[in-house]
Length: 221
Image (cartoon, rainbow, N blue to C red):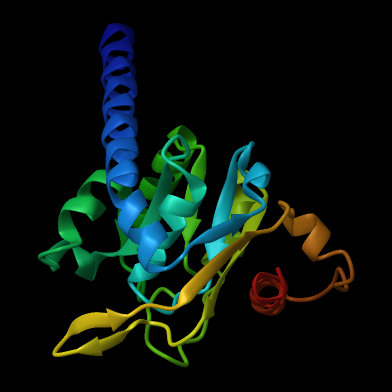
């Protein structure tokens, strides 16, 4: 059994290295159009040196491409994505290759185990707390709970658009792109976020407040 486990570990390691190569290739491929169309500027890339959970507000599907390009081809982000994207004709291949598909509405044991397995191999996890681009969606506490469980810092990222975002479309084709600045903040631990919370606070209330503070931290980065 130990021999089988060793071969599985080797196979998993090789699969991750292949993903690294393809991810880097895709980021380099998307780098020119994303940088030119959005006149992209990035601040704080040095905060990505260690392992962490990258968190950003979700306003558009463009967020994924902007975030990947901003972080660079050598810093592969493993995203948590909703299962519905596995049926999306454009995003399905990217979800299969570079994300963990979860049931956002009924996050269960299977989803949790898959997330932990991916997190054990990934240097950077990517989470959009709202889990959707729908306006007014309330952020969920998954990023906080995952940071606690993995003992990893949260890395707030603010995607600042100077102009209409998502881009203005004509007949479903983007025709006007805003200038975008990506601000990557310093890592922060859950303990640092919860320093002023009363210790007797129920866990659900604690996670809710920490999520609200996290979203505020993203906006102020």
